[in-house]
Image (tube, rainbow, N blue to C red; front, side, top):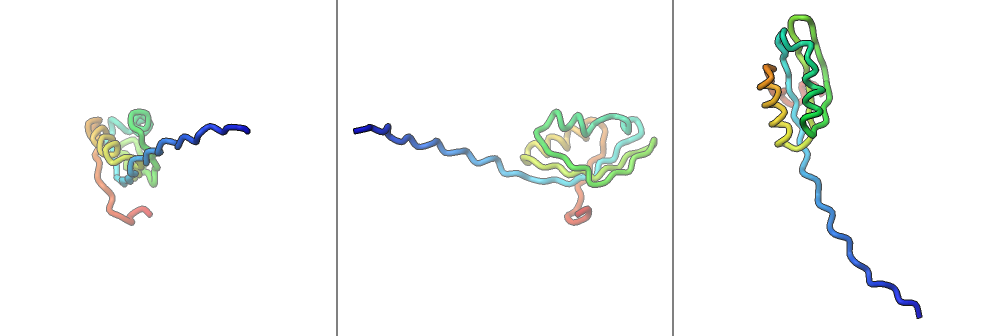
Length: 97
């Protein structure tokens, strides 16, 4: 008679942290227009970003940016942009959808 080993239950898979979404207008002053700040943010924070619209000139940059990830990461990224000299304003719901 062939013995089968007892079944060992798989450990419970932890549920991923609840995902959040933030939508913001970023306003870059002239001195930052050519800086790759969104790229730098994407390397520094565990977030998915989506540029919903942008208007960039030599004088100013205005970008509608969507950030998906943990709420703590979104808040940290917003503070990081502000520390870099970018004005960050939340977008009201349904403005760019």
